[in-house]
Length: 194
Ligand code: S3P
Image 1 (cartoon, protein in one colour):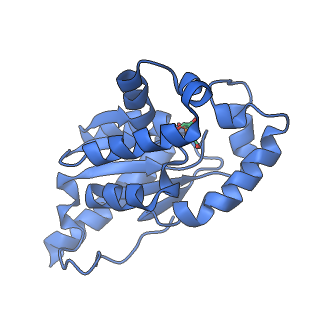
Image 2 (image 1 turned 180 degrees about the vertical axis):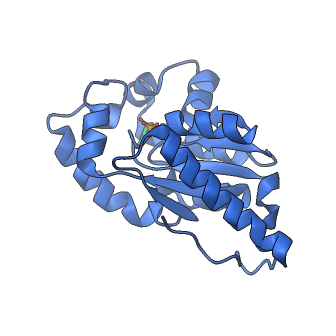
């Protein structure tokens, strides 16, 4: 697990303000953002939201239909708009689509809104989790494992922009939630010790 030092963007506010803000979960498809996010929100008494769900509701169609009918670029525009609209939310756990980090504006907006946590997982773990599902257009390909490896390599530097990273391989949802809450508490305490 990676936990950074308390100074953040030179604001001088440390991490204590975190308890007022949100936790955004980022990570590859199948890294457990939704499952972890729901339990995390319950434990913290926060609300849970999912950017893909918001997109589907606002567009009145599934992500797959959106990709098929309007293309990935259009999906990314809507995704960025949704992230902008999250501004002002407090005490929410936000589960995000796996590609959200590839737009720097999204990372910056999610950081302004609170803490970004990256759920890391190995390609094989991801493959095992997603192989029985068909709702992810980017993985409806001939060789999903190869696609996962390539996309993951490309995206890793973007995910690494997160404030905290958690290695999820071999951990169940409860354990991952526990690790995140510990990191969150630790970072939030920094301010009160100042
Ligand atoms: C995507 C991940 C999906 C969804 C869309 C694109 C991606 O979300 O946003 O299919 O680019 O990695 P999940 O990570 O929740 O599967």
